Every structure is written in C-alpha cells, then in structure tokens.
Image 1 (tube, rainbow, N blue to C red):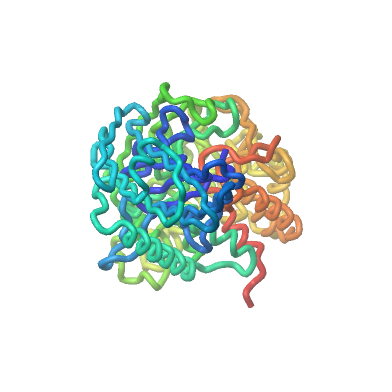
Image 2 (image 1 turned 90 degrees about the horizontal axis):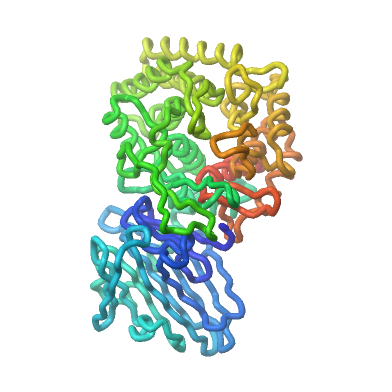
Length: 586
C-alpha cells in the first residue's frame, strides 16, 4: 500500500503523493481533517491530480538531498515533469512554512498533454464544498478558512477537468488561509529555489556514516518532516487507518505525539547532528508535564491536548475497502509506564552536553529529572498496557521495567553532572531495584531471555533493546541467548520479526513490524555477528517502497509494506543500524 508514495512537507504539514495524485494532505495541522484523502476513500476523499494524458510511463524520484518530489510523465506526444513541494526556508530570522502546496509543470520534449483535477473536501469527506472562479484563481467554499487554487493553467480546463497542451511552464499554488497575492510564476519559482537550498543546507549539516549514506539521508529527511515545529511535538506517522495487514481491523490513527516514539526519533536526530528538535521537544514536554502534574500519558495531540477520543468513520471505506477508518486513539487513555524512563533519556542530552550549558538553569534541570524519577519509583512494579498497547489487559511488562532501569541509570549521570547528591542517591536506589526486578521476575532461565511479561514465557521484540541500552553487555553469555531466543520465537521470514506472538485484542498478529528487524540488526552487530547483521540489513534496504521510505509493517507472504506511513520508528531503526554497521571514517 505504501509503494510509490512520496512525502513532502515543511514541518507545518505533510502530504503524500503518488504519480501526480495527492493521496493524503491534512490542514491546518497534520492531525486535522484531510483536505485530500483518496488513499482512504476514492469517492469521498477528494482529488488533486496532475495527469499525463495517455501516459505510457510515470517515474517518481526526489530531487537529490531534498524533500522536493519530481514526477516525469512520458506521453505519446512528449514528456513533462511535475515538481511538488511545501515551501520552507528562513525568512526574517524565522522559518517560513505556510499551509501552501506548490506544483510546477514543465514540458521536457515534444507536445505532451496534461490534465489537472482539483476537488478538495473537509470534515473527512462530509463537508459540502463549492467553488467559484475569479480571474486567475478558484476559490473553494465549505472550509473554516479561505482555500484557493491560484494558477496560470486556463481555469476552464481546471474546472472542466479537460486535457490541455503543455507548451510552457505552468504553476499551481493551493493555499489554506492566507492566499497568494504576489506574482504567481515568480513566487513559485523563487519558493522552489529557496526550498531546495534549505533542504540541501540541512543535509549538509547532517552527520552521516561512511556507508549507507543515501539511505540515511532519505530517512533523516523523512524524520524531519514529522516534527510539528510550532509546538515541538513529533508525530509517530503521517497517516491514519492504513491496515497492518489485510482484513486485520488493525487500523489506527498515528498522527499524534507518542512520547516513546519521540524519544527514539530524538535519539536518531541527535546521532545525525541535529539538536534543535530536542530543544523544541523539551518545551513541549514541560508544558504537558505541568498540565498533568507530573503524570504522563503515552500520547498527546500536537497542541499538547490530552484527549483524542477514538471513533470510527463509517462513511469512509478505508484503504482498498479495508476499514474501519479511525480518528483519535484509545492509547491516550492507557497507562504505559515506560514513558518516564524514555523522557529522562530524551531530555538528558540537554543537561549533559556542554553545548547547551546555561540554556536551562541547573535547578530546573534537577526538578525535571527529579519529577520523572519520582514517577519511575512510584510505578516500578505497576502493571500497564505495555509498549504495544494491549487494550484489554494490564501486566508488568519487561520492557517497562527495562526503561525504568535505563531512566534511573541516566538520572544518576545527570545528577552527578549537576552536583545534585540527593537526586543521585535516590536514582542509584531506583536503578538497583529495577535491575533486581529484571533479574528476579523478567529473566526466564528456561526460555533464555527477558520475557514480555514478568513471570510468563512470551517473547517480545522490544526487549532486544536490552543490548542497545547496555543492560545485557556483549560478553554476558545471556546476551546471545536472549537475542537468539527472540529471533527463533518471533521470526516469520529471514530476519523479519513480529512484535510478539501472544494473542492480543484482535487475535494473533500476522505482519512483521519493520523496526523490530532493524533492532535485530543492531543486536547482532553488538554481538559482533557482523556478517549476519549486514546480510539482514541489506535485505531490509531492498524492501523500501521505491523512494527509500518505510511504513510500519512488512507482509511476510508478499514482502509488501503495510500499516501507517511513513513510520518514524522504521526510519529511526534504519539510521541506527546503518551507523552501527558502517565502517569508521578513520
């Protein structure tokens, strides 16, 4: 389902496109209603398509080192290209990132014929949308703000959806809110050059490994688009309701900020040399922690709101008719205690890295870490829904205990760096208790691994992170046993891993979860089984969607991608595994 989908965006919104069709675009925020959502319903999802008439071939690619998408149409009469982008560049000491989609058509040879269709919608396809024409634009009604298409394509051809000869460059600018009042052609071309320059400069400022550079750069660019810059929130994925596997009913809305996913994303961005996302996220975290009096939910809306009631939209058919379509997510109501340890890890860099000294007062830093440690202490043995968000059961999950241990250990480091002796002492005590809990209740000698639930034998791929976090050192005999047990128990096809095999609220999981296989790559590399790790990694690299992008899941029967897209988890896994396997620069 993700094959051929490209993502563009500007850290204010993102859009998914395939062969000239806007398959997904939400305004004004990524968690708002779609304006175009044909990927979930071809009848009610609206349309914004640029088509080559009788096209014999359509080829998509990114302009190198950017988030600008290029589509080339080969038609009987000639060829033309389509450039799609969301403007983003520095302006007046801030970033200009409007709710604006720019599309530029350029003839390349002969006399190709093109067609433009634009029918936006809203309220998830329920809005009554009308339109009226001015001299050089079409205005659409039925929205909470002006929506306008400004273009030098003859408006009659747009309104009637008729083909036209593409004899010169044509420009399409769709806006939400503030319309384009400047010159169309000059503005679109200038915005293109400045946006290309912004992304190329961003990539130049990105740290890359010696090997796998193209794959890491594309993943880095995808991660950046999942930052909602206005508040600092980080999205888990761009979409909602793309099924984990056909007929599964596992169709979730991932357009929110999961604190766990945010930690992993921040960790990868820091490895890439980008820290501004971490600083913005800390502001976001402090706001939601203040409002919740220290208690953290697993997920929040992009504006920090703590509620997103889950409901099904019965009027939408779903991807390929495979519903239900859901908005909101029940995970907002869950207890998932691993988030406290992850947040210590996420923010600790700002307190331990000398580049940030002075930006956050030591007293504030101590208060932040002390508050998170207090929650870890209080919830050390509290059952929860676990990282995979079981809906109808609560257990003491091994992954939550592991993150308690990792958070407490990092709290010790922060406290020592800040000279907070009392905090350091409490953190050491919590670390020791968490370690004892892992040893006595989560390690299963018969299975030879840390298990999903304390005292039970089920396996969980998330516990591969026991090696990444340093709980199981490479020379510990249990480390190899642990990795091999998880691989043996969860593998579905040549290193592709399920998250778990225990039945959940929807039965047995079928699809392989993409990031789990990247975690396995890293675990094998940590064990110095480098050839084995590299073989699996290069297999995973071959399974991208045609544009270097990854969704949530891989179907073991067909090796197609499935689930929400692009999934930040998946790209984080790729980046970390590439750095782990790459040759050193020196």
